[in-house]
Length: 165
Length: 156
Image (cartoon, rainbow over all chains, first blue to last red; front, top):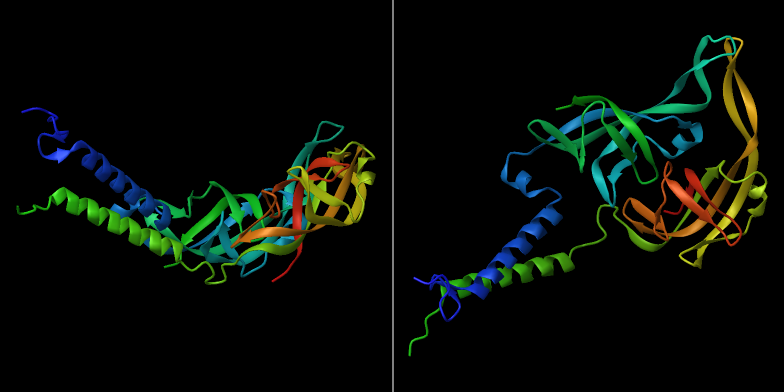
């Protein structure tokens, strides 16, 4: 049996253009599902559950004015999407510095200009063993995280993470 | 002659129907729900700061200056300018001491601008506006890389 017949049929069963069109349709459908579901295709075919999580980030040091745009109740966001979660607590803390003085002794004290913020949020995020994800970001203590709301996008580190239910 | 329907043709027709249905649902989706607002006429006021300008250059920024981006004036105006000492901290005699760096100055500028808003995202001529992000501040006299300090005011 010929691979492609004179009429252009593969194994005398399906026309080569029909096959190409079917593949194109399949790819377009997969692409659309992947884009608009906000998940990747693997997540759609395996067990992903939503869990309520409370996590805290510690921002990098900034002048205190930078934290004026964060308020309890602010919705979290990522790019052009809202995330299903809100800010529940904000605490401004000292930024500790250690500098050598003119006698060669290390001096440790709080930075007079910059502070850090501990921001706690409660968020519904996806869990697929063993990874917790909020939007595209993997949520694990120690991860660098862009804390984002409508008004701020501050570099921070995740310092606490617990399942609420 | 009896016409035979090819099963592949049926699959292709179904595929086209699915695509058309998907396209219809996408085009007719609601864009304004649950507080999700899309607007190209949204006004915000935000403050930026920099200590990267050469000494004295901050005086070239004036209230009323119009911002420039992409080779044209934007609907964005300077509403406030302040120039302060650039302070640093050093350790001396076992304690921290605040000192003024005489080679720098801290310039803070407040801008009132019309921005594009897409849900939680807003941009001014392609630059995202959020506290903590870098922002290229440009007028017809000065350009410098700044950091957005805070959102001062925003229309609802």
